[in-house]
Length: 530
Image (cartoon, rainbow, N blue to C red; front, side):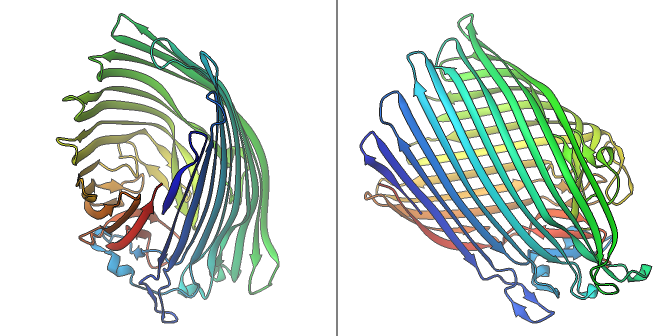
């Protein structure tokens, strides 16, 4: 639902939007014969207020509140050596949990954007805050007699940006500014309960209680210089410093033999700072007023950090470095056929250093670095409107990725030989195509089809999901009053497709957890705009 419009003409605008979804689920728990253990409830509420007291000053306040409660997932355990693609969503219909899985996520955010326009310069201030709270409990296995893994964390992020930019949209343009971000992460609970009776220790609860902080300081700038009538040269860069620290307390406590007794513990605290300069340059050639070709070289960066759930080692053992990349791109974009056809196409290559690799063991995710990798591909998109009432769009991306140098021990202690392998979670291709029709009377309809190529989910390339195709349809009626009533069907053919797969070591009966995308979903909705 969305309601919005001018409260005071040309001065005050308000938009309120929200949605609520409820799903009773379809999974039955064989342990206690409870049905619908995968039920979900969620809502998302947002409000935007824009105030323009003068022609020069504008202020926008954005608020949002999100809540989600979910139970068991569409997940199935696959034994070692089995083909994950031989399983389907129907295999998740009956599960056997002696602890009810549940995860609750709550978040709220606020953003204030202020803009003041001088004669030739625009000043912008953007202030944000976001708080996310997540609590989860997950069954490990009924054979473990009620043992579970658990996670509880709160994340607060504050940002402030000040920016100056030239007011003109053509000719010589520039922008410059400073940015600050502070993040607090509190993990009072992160771990699980495990069966160590084979080692004479009974059942133990392993928990890492940690606090983490991160501060980011950055300055950025960019200029665009026109020359030789059809060319524009862009030169920019960002200098940033990220400071992080962690205080981690790991404890292993007896559950049954000596209840409450700490049988093992480990503490480490560490801090580190990373400074980087991220340059960018691009050359644009204007073929005509609506169509341009370009070439660019830029720098990509993902910050380093520390792993929590550390039961041994210190800073060097539990720290991972930033991921850096040099990105090359050549492409074309713009309108043709008198604005009826938009085209975009590009070829890219990414040279990646210290690429982040995530390992999953004992229900804990750990980040490490692989030395070198690369990614290259071709992307194409088009939007065609032969007549005002018909819109056709399509996009396809072909990508090839590879680890160039990767020999490292994963979180399970196994040496990974991944040189020459495809980087996990990068599909061989993505594609989508759609067509929509809008009648002058207000009736409209749309069909969309999306596809994804084969995808590996581990660096060893032993876990591979097949390609899939999913189709959606939507039809509705927009009234002149602003009311829009519609119906939709998502995943029309009820396609079984895998969205994630995780190798795991704690469950004795299987070594891979496979998650499926949503099945066919039918719904109705409405939107009102004034």
